[in-house]
Image 1 (cartoon, rainbow, N blue to C red):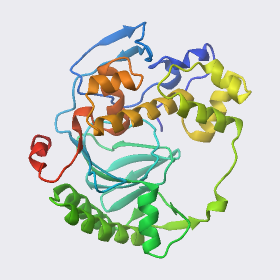
Image 2 (image 1 turned 90 degrees about the horizontal axis):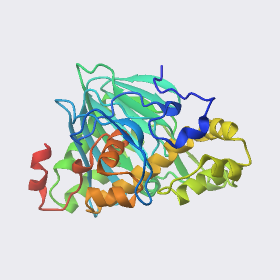
Image 3 (image 1 turned 60 degrees about the horizontal axis):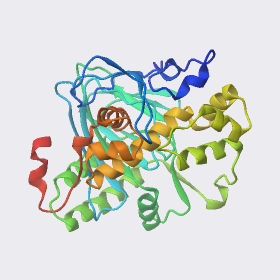
Image 4 (image 1 turned 90 degrees about the vertical axis):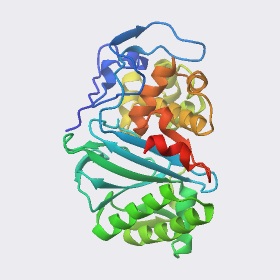
Length: 342
């Protein structure tokens, strides 16, 4: 059962307070912030929001090893290597395709509100926009997790080379295929260990073609994609435009032409998350881009609407599995800079 609790009723207009009972975080949200205990923030910096009451926990659990990696020349590709024990992702979505496998240890995955136990030898495949979350099934065993996040442009280019037209979609979130999972893990390791652009691009081109052949995929014509904007689409567009700003629930309800209660219910039913969690994910996404670009974490926090660096670190950890210090762009000849993360 999902351990997140959405409690409506009473004073639901307080939904903007991070850490409120409306959206109680399930699972661990540890971050490398070095803080402890509880703290109440009652005022915010310019362009940021107060955090409300929230727990600032100690660093990563022993045995957890994390890396989020990109390459400048391999556009639309992001690699996550994570050995988790107690970390649990909050429900979230990506604007990329996600292909993942566990190298060791079973994973508990929830996808579109359906729970799955994912064993080694299984590929997880999630389309853009699909709500999911995951964690180790048994913290004692741990969960050795390997992921590639691939932009739609990257996936579609590879699909066209295989004779697949239209917009590609994974039909099923799980594909039990020991050979395919092994091929994915080999590709993942080769990309991480690569020392030249040509080597990376060669491994990636062959590996992704194999994965698309293993995956259960369908295509749909562009004309079949839903067109038009409902009142809820307008709310979502407003959140994309104001992702770094304090947003009032009254303003969203006015845009939708709904009561606050019905807005909250219908927004979550359509997009999988309540508005405040949707906005938080947008902030984390923008923050991640700035971190990849080399901006200092304290400056990223100010630029993206977080109260302070600790607030940013905690949020990035909960949504991506890694802390800002473990987000890196790889340049040829710079492999030594990663030695401390291995």
